[in-house]
Image 1 (cartoon, rainbow, N blue to C red):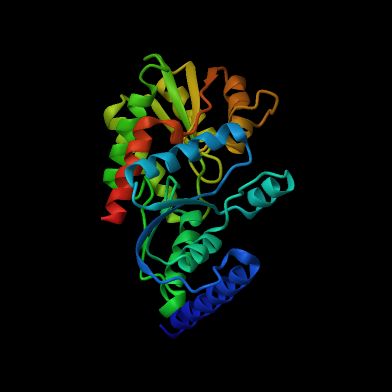
Image 2: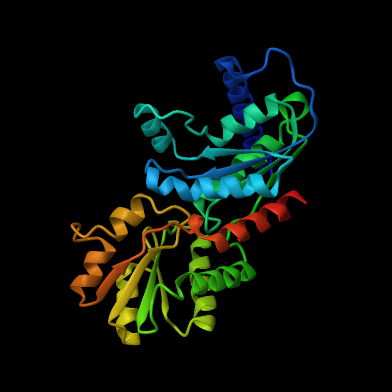
Length: 302
């Protein structure tokens, strides 16, 4: 207990120092903002440096603005590598980190802030966002946010997996024939129990899709080798490979679909004798995924 309190105090100190640093960097107002009942939604994404993939993120931001016309909706990227790359490329309006975004919202006087991650599972990346929200919650007075909330990921419960399974069946019903297996590439999260949510989603899909969907991950299990074995056991010859990710970024375009990379999923499946087609679009571009995201926002902000 004592260690936990010390850890939270340390987090609070770090956030307080960060807040001061951000304030002196020029985003702070000259006058201290009076905190009224102003609402804001902060959507957090790992981010992407690929213009074609950014559409999926922007789609969720636009949907949030339409659903909450009276709230300020902003975007933050959690990947410093992507943020720095965008800055080096001279891109304008590079999304801030979640800490910087919360500091600015606090400075502008927002009393209620909902932080909504765009992650599929509550893994390591989600834990980082959760740590920021919990640490910021320790700040009181003028440096604190009166009502700070954290939304859930898509696959955070059995019900969430059932909902996503229904969305995926609808998403691919016209893209893949009944003789074609749909292979989904999840990101995965190393050494984290949340990776088990992919297995729960597989269970949900098996109930509603007659065993036509096969889930693998990049950074944990099931591996592509596990998917290949399952495909052969089921007797499929044709496959449609698509990302189980909000954004079809580097993993989708390179680890999944690169025809010149012998270690890509496309190449591995080809080598194993499967006919392979790819569908490189992030889930954030799907209208039903967007609708589910908005419902999660409403649940968080009610």
